[in-house]
Image (cartoon, rainbow, N blue to C red; front, side, top):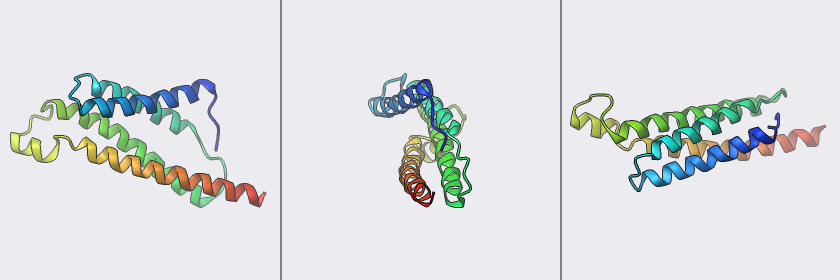
Length: 133
């Protein structure tokens, strides 16, 4: 895996911290929470997309694709956080409650589980690959 430089690593960590703060303060109904989460998600996902794998392992490539899917889900969570504050899609009240309201929690949970899994498995596969060399 291509390593990030110091600035990129700082943006990556700050983005992760802002995502946690944004998600946590959203539960306290802070109006700026979606903005904090969105900025964090943009920083986190953009820096994670810069980490490329130049090897030939099919397993690591597959895990990277899953990780990129979780990055997209983080961004979808940010959009749904904004949509949960008010009915921006102009749906009926019942449809809004069924399909939009607080559904960002589901996409965030799926993205977090995928991130945990892929991070753990990629590190295992990289160690295996390093032992072969």
